[in-house]
Image (cartoon, rainbow, N blue to C red; front, side):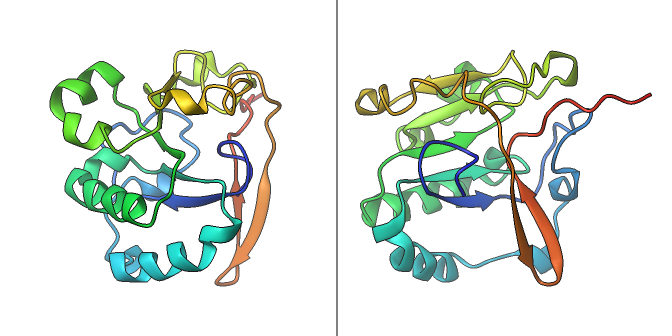
Length: 176
């Protein structure tokens, strides 16, 4: 994907989310769904195949920290395969994650934190709402992410299993 961080990225969506934000772009990922489970070994084969054409990895959801131990294992595998630029979107605040899941945070290069707030969706940048923060934990990526908060939003559409999947940060929905 090219709509969830700079460059060509592998996108990983996690299942399960306790936040249930109003007008969430992925409500289909709120509840656990065993049919959508993918083993880490399946993911490893994809990671190995795509390494040469990938500029980074984006992990979103759902809520990635909802499955914190699996997230930690996944991040470890990405590091073993020498992926750099791992971006994670979470509804939790950085301060909470730093206090509660510091061992996981050490494996993340960039964190977008905070609950999605539909009233603060200003249609700008690659975060859902203005209250969310892009926290660069790996200083080597500062230049790469210099336009993250201002970059024009875009969408990518894919066909998978007979369904259209739209990827990107959605613009604000206005209901009349």
